[in-house]
Length: 49
Image (cartoon, rainbow, N blue to C red; front, side, top):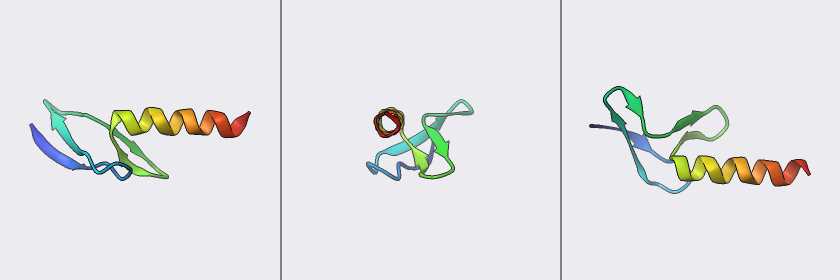
């Protein structure tokens, strides 16, 4: 397990486990944990409506 970076929204540490990132790289927001990714998707859906 290797530290890949910090979530740009909440500051949580994001790790790379066995070659897989425990988060998402977003072009707009940078590195995000899964919880913040879900929150961002939810917020974007609310803006579209």
